[in-house]
Length: 507
Image 1 (cartoon, rainbow, N blue to C red):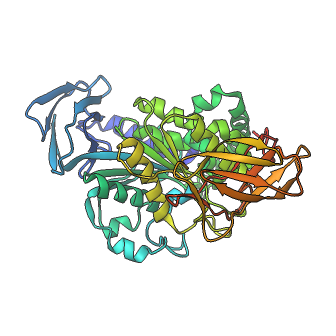
Image 2: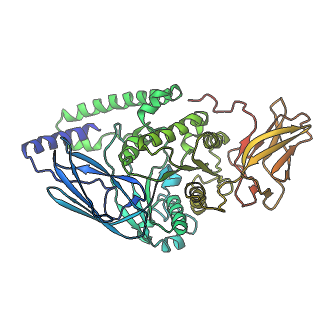
Image 3: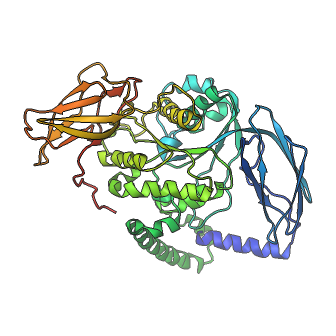
């Protein structure tokens, strides 16, 4: 909290002590009109009231009345059971010292949608933030009329300590509301809705330019020695910042010039600090029961991709632990090709996918843009995320959800044979011969290679490498590969070696 805010809140505290007022039931914005509650679950309702206040809760889908009592500090929380979604609208009435009626409540499927700017990127053109909206945004905005899809955008905020609440509100999916909502989240939710035919609740909590450590709790970062350099850098930055800030305020406040306090020095890139977004934009959500999460982030961690191998899984486990919903589905996007990135960040994401249960990874090598870190084809990204959810979470049959994923290799004389998962029905090259394959011998020098499809494997060779030991595929900042499975989903970049890369041991 800034020095100025402490002054303001201190004054407010004196005012309220001298002017006591009666407390009454208060609900977080997440528990509001138009919300979607996870079907067939035990979900939480929570809020605040007078200390020891008795509260009666009436649920629109059952006759039994729930009676609870707020604790000595006025906090209350209750678990309620939800039935199967039926597309009806319900009311929830809470009666204490006052009565609150929540209207148009739906039962359905609820997903958290988080990450950095490619998740934050809105369906329509947002002021001057983007030069254009997403691909075909005018047509898709006009058609975004799905009243059974509900949208909640968490206002961006950063905090050094865990917050209790967020700003935002549940909105119906209309063209006007969808225009300013996350495009990837919208397309994901739309695809789910069109297949499942039940209400969909989407909670978008994202912020451009942010790092995975910003979305991870402080205690998790403190427990792993690989993350301690993150906290050390942050502590040094904090000391420098607050030393200057204290000096600044001391100088101006001695002159009794309160207006100048408004002109305090801005804090550069506070949203990149460790754990501050977890505190402000994730921690306040954990009472809300969800089905799973989708994630699009990684660009801001590319310079420490080797660290991301452990940081990203730690963040996922952190979220799963605090939600206390076992290993809920976590589906994410492997970042798209761009000249500013490196192949090691995609490898780190691939390692996370392979090493964690109930995760899925969307490959985007075919829809990137080497000069635009915000590729405009968000529809394909959102729909590919939905394929994972439909196939693995909702057990829908005959849905192809992943492109080829490298499994292992076998040396065949002067050639190397590559084996894949998710290629059971064969592989194919789009339009031309396979590209972006390289091969190397023990000298670790890579040469462009000839790659041939043999059923669901690839045979790789080069006349320049007589005794090959390693193969790499699409191993560059902005590759342009053309390997797909029979369903037309692209293969993930990979390498068969583990030779140290440019981010090795960078923490």
